[in-house]
Length: 254
Length: 305
Image 1 (tube, each protein chain N blue to C red):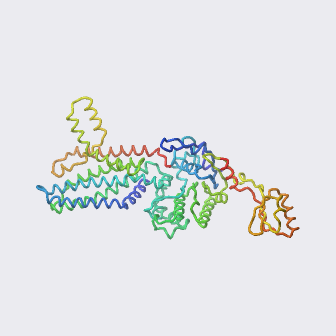
Image 2 (tube, each protein chain N blue to C red; image 1 turned 180 degrees about the vertical axis):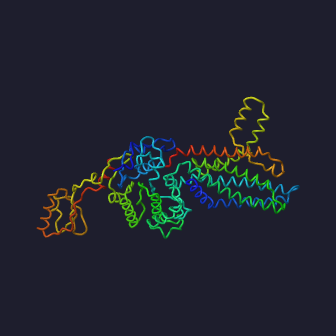
Image 3 (cartoon, rainbow over the protein chains, first blue to last red; image 1 turned 90 degrees about the vertical axis):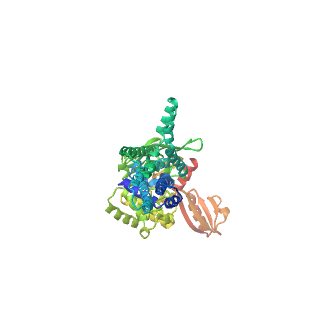
């Protein structure tokens, strides 16, 4: 009940944020623009639309999560609304979880809106519905949940600008860390390889959630991969939220 | 009478500046608030009033000391269910309307949906905000925010209401209304903890007072105990007498036109003055004995502290 109340209030607050609609506008523009990119492409034009469309869902979804998520807790502290809120009979973890769920709901709705534009565009071009795209969209949502938790974690102790930089770095590093996997295979066995392996364990691998190539080219996806990625997303998100809670639990609100 | 709030040896410091030097804000605060009292927590700006309140509410973690609410540890939810809090300069969600806001806070206080709607109406009526129930808080004036803040603090019908500068920033009429509400809370048997630097308010409504200066409590007790009823001096405004005739009788201040203000410290001199005025055909315009006020006590303490 109390978590739901906070989540719904957060949802109301974030869904009324104008910056969300600005990002939605850019996302829609990019998706529609992919139709023009397809015109100047040699080969399969649908693939370009799908590729650019999915990439913009991921990018603009992440930007929404970061821009709003990094403000979420900070704003409550800065505007002092947290004083009265925490004087009510609620635990601090309930507050944080409510904030997370509220933003997750907002992101879900935004992702569905963007997906609708994207799927309609694909349908207009191919006259059939490609259900496999929904798998890719589901994995993007998992990725957005993880990024939201990271944004909230930074928001617990840092200003929105710094938190945005940190979260954006997390997103970029996460999408480039697969290079480390290749590197591990290339370097000789020894301490340098162990070092690379440890580094690879520590940094997030957001490419797990990226199945653009497989979906666009119609390659098979094993159910094992599907399960692994879901568990990876859920546990990583819970892990980050736990750290956020541990920081938030002992924080003084001056 | 049951003890509602008990604080023992509370210490809190903050790290400030680039070098993160420790600055002590509370240096061993101890106080008790009994059931049904209006307890005034008085101190100059920066004395540690808000810090104490935030420690009670669990917004700050003290380094040392113990806080009990209704005999329970102050962080327990069962204790929190029985308190209400109005912060200084309340800030609330600007995107919500007055009734949406109260609804939200009602849900946090764990009430049934049906009860919440009824209580929202009741509270909006109590603080006189019914006509603005559907206006977003963004458009509220300071006084209106203070009222809606008051309403949220009373949502769960708390046994203890903690108010941080509740009358600050209100016009005279608003202040009177707030004072009336606080007095009504007392009639209903609730306990009120009121922090303020405005002496008048405390003097008017509080039963018990603690004076905090520089993180320490300097004095604590009922108003009656703290402020002596002994007449300190008598102020006489008179006319028709020459200034050299009054020289030895008291401290003389010039006043409007022919009138003179005389501050007389010895009581037996008052009769002498009255006789003198009658003899010289002068006139006494007013004669007011002045007892010690909370202000005198407070100013004296702050200067010492």
